[in-house]
Length: 238
Image 1 (cartoon, rainbow, N blue to C red):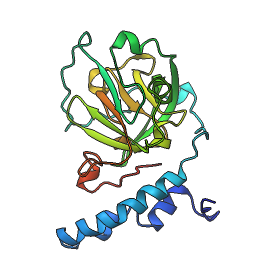
Image 2: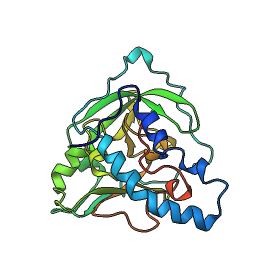
Image 3: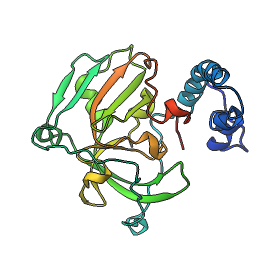
């Protein structure tokens, strides 16, 4: 039976108590070699505990349309928007799946659409209420049928950004691949043609310009994610 969190602790406090969110601060005064060794030892525990926190069917309450602030979502200045030709764009889905596929935008638009009004939370300390429109990642998974061996989902983007998620978070009913923002086509600087959106992850987990999705039985060495490999917490949950 999964461990129960004490009633006086919220999810964020529990992560901090176990050292998952604060690990970087605890190790900041240590040598690089020691930090790397501790990171390798703690990563499996962090991943396992994070996965236990995900309730695959539990929906996060949405915000009303009146809460949307079209100007609140900040575009990071260190992002370089890649040039993507919509006619040549392809989304590849492969790895531990029965039916690997490659889909163009026309095919992707055939997947039943949905939307969610959620709070986008950045690890830098700001947040914005945004309406994302697109399709559920779990609907895409239904098409490719992940094998029983699949435990993680890896994402690659046109700007070389990488991410890795636990399978339960990727298949959460409110995890989307979005092509619309606040009722309008998704702007290029915000990740068009497709970006990740979900209320259960921090902003750095929400890859823009997604071009490839790989279901995997393990995370390859050096493949936790662009920011995670620099010390950010892997699970990145809210």
